[in-house]
Image (cartoon, rainbow, N blue to C red; front, side, top):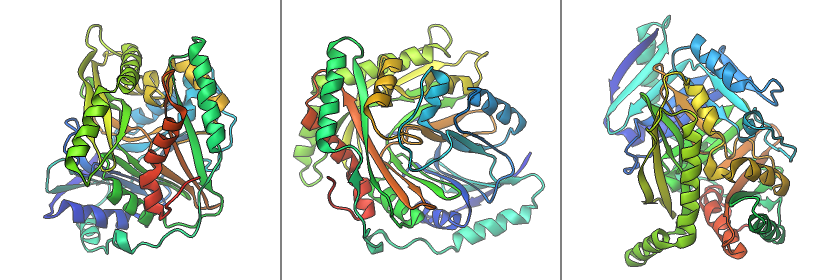
Length: 446
């Protein structure tokens, strides 16, 4: 049981800015922002915040030799039937399949982390109502106090006033090494090992001093992405401007919306921008990538779905964001009554858009050719409601930061197919890194 109170606001955007600044006092934070994105028909919330200082009810896993993290999460949810927030790291793949991770990791987040928050604040989509959820034993007056604190809190400095970073980002994989890896993966594709592999590379700063909350505010304002997330786990941070949904459960329906297909935007010339959008839609390589991922997701959902309920209500949808156009397809299914929501996530994890097809071989090749452990990058952040519904993103277009050792990481990647042109794949990586670079005040990557 919880105390739930509703408050009226007049300016959701201004309230969200104050809410983020207010959350900075807590050492455990998940802040999720849809950024008023108009084209997400499945979004339930404009914004969600969960905070705690040293939360008493958490579940965490790192290199779990019993390989039962998802089962532990199910038990955790059954004991704590309120709101739950947290993340799933990419390296949980080692539990879903017989795989391993041995590459360098400068961030050192757990593979899985979920907590029961002390305070939940949420704004429904297209609403001027704020809801504050507190533990049952908390007096109702506490909700009014929290609302007043947020409403009167000083927002973060305007984006234009934030300082430029006094450091550079260096590549862990050089341009030539990346081009060589693309060519090697194309040999695997030609040999029939895989059809497609998502290859990622890292840029990093070994001694970067940033204000994580202010940097996220800047990133969020620049990207306005529908699955943005700010996560604080003690002294580790995720600053995420993701455009992609991994998996949502809405009553008995599962919804996945993989992205495959990217084209730059030209905001100075609307006519040219429309031409770029059409070029993306008609590009045979991008469409082929998208079809492969749709087939992979359909296969993943089959393991959780009622027979005959898998549908593809949208294929090759062209969605526009601040810096890029993307091809996004939507796959839905009705979950079987005997499948717990944690099992549905496990059956689809990691997301096919960040692995490739066939999935297991793609993940083996990713481990072989990449030189950074992905960690939370290519993982997922989200929430679980008291009713057992959930919504999880894909962690891309993100910065990861370890404030203890001041290590800053930016990973980006893309799908490699037989028809890929290595130089173009490299340029796509730079395009995807652009907004995070601007948020840091960095103008060039090697």
